Amino acid sequence: VGSTSEIIQNQNSGILINANSSEFADWISTQGKKRCTLVRTEHRPVPLTNLIYYEGHWLTEAEIPKEAFRHLNPARKDFPLRHEDLVTRLPSLIDLELTPCIIYCGKRFDCENLAQQIERTLPPLSAEQAERIGNVLQNAHNDVGALTFIKPSLRRMIQTYGVAYHHSGLAPAARIAVERLVKDGLLRFCAAT
Image 1 (cartoon, rainbow, N blue to C red):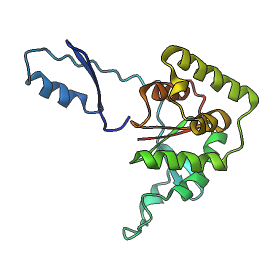
Image 2: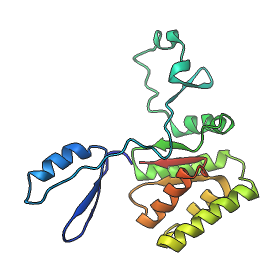
Image 3: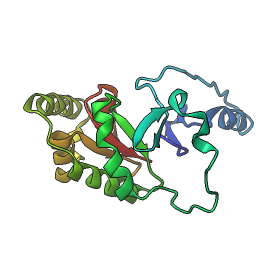
Image 4: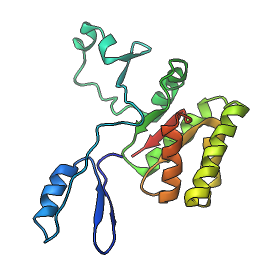
């Protein structure tokens, strides 16, 4: 997720996962004797919707009034939005059925901090929702040992409130579990780098 790269490599080959993969593939092809093949997909398992919070409501790009940006004050210094302010706006996305919602953060610490703030504003999931999440976590554990790498506080956050964080500081098995939950539509919010 984001501008970070992951390279999975063995003796003979490598796999790069990166937003700028075509430039990297071109460069890597010039570095050695091996051929580099770029494989790309436009398929998104979780579709993205761009939203803007305007006058107390979440709007899609198509719904934004034309006059919305006419009177912006360039001297305004309240960006990026403080986590405390963002957290108060997020619960309405659940009612609009716009979850799972991925909130991008600049740092690992910000991901964890924001996820903790979000969980404090939400009511707990229903027993049925928590059970479905528990089943996915158990399957991820059976497949890759995910629960071994998920801290108890993160597991509680995920299974009680449907909130998680995702960053490179998590073990790959833990990231796989969070990604499955997002793709399956079971999380409400995920703060990610």
